[in-house]
Every structure is written in C-alpha cells, then in structure tokens.
Image 1: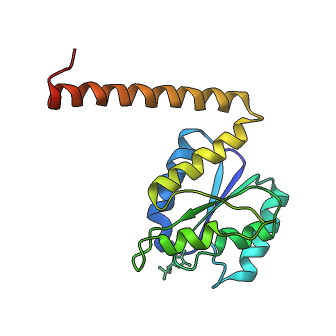
Image 2: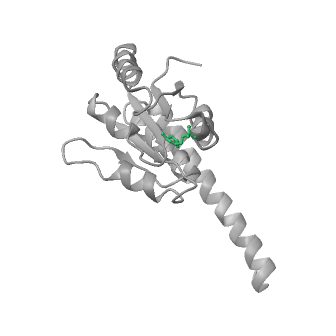
Length: 171
Ligand code: RP5
C-alpha cells in the first residue's frame, strides 16, 4: 500500500466493525491509510501526538469514528487544519443519536464534516475523503466517476428485478 494519505482513527476497538466499511472503500480506490485506536478521553496525549506526527508524515485527511460522547473528531479538528471527517458510531444506549449530535455540533471555527450514523456513514466518510483527494488526482477522479456509473447500473438492475417481481412490468 502507498504512503498513508488518510488517518482512520477510532475511539475503541469496539468501533472496528463499522470502521471496516471505510477501510474497504479506501482499499478499493487504492488510497493508503493508517487505522488506529486512539481516544479523546482515554488517551488524550497520545491522540494529539499522533495527529501532529501524522501531519508531518503527509497525512492529508483525518477520519474519526467514535460513539457515545463522541469527541474524537472534534479534538482532532482542534489540533489540525487538515479536513476532519466524523463517523458517528451506532451506540447501543441511544442508537447513535448521542454520537451524531456530539460529532456534528461543533462550535463555529472548528469544522468537522459529519457523516450518517453507522456503516453508511463509514462508507461515505471514505468516499468523501476520496473525493477530496480526487480534486488533485485525475486518476482517482476517473475511478470515482466509474464507481458512480457502476452504482447507476446496479440500481437499474434492481429496478428491473423489482418491476418483474412486483408489478409484472419488466421488459
Ligand atoms: C467511545 O466510547 C468509543 O468510540 C466507543 O464507540 C465507545 C465505547 O467504547 P468501549 O467501551 O466499547 O471501549 O469512546
């Protein structure tokens, strides 16, 4: 894998199954990333040291997944001017609403691009990171367009199938 352009941080190893969805997307696009468990609350010093070091090593985008009182993305954003994308984990106590609100409600001046709760958010976080990188990488932009076209085809196939199965209107 190439030099990590994306740092993918999670507050706990219990977030890993969700974060895996983001990893799959980045792997599909051939974007190098580093995944780490670092917590805004449990390992605050190590988190800040990692962010500073990652910037020096050329990480361009931070993705942060956390649940509950999810301050990971916000704390990262406070320590870097690189884009930070937040994934609110679908927590068991409040189904992720806690994670969503604590990730999205940043004070003006320190933005976090907050995705949907759970696995859809994880996929979109990675896609959003690829879109940012694609602004200055024509090959990546081409792959992104191809992926969108493939998605259109998949939906069209599903449409055909549903028409045949449910309404008998398939051609
Ligand atoms: C957050 O607390 C983590 O991101 C995780 O979603 C949540 C629960 O962590 P564990 O108790 O499973 O380690 O910091």
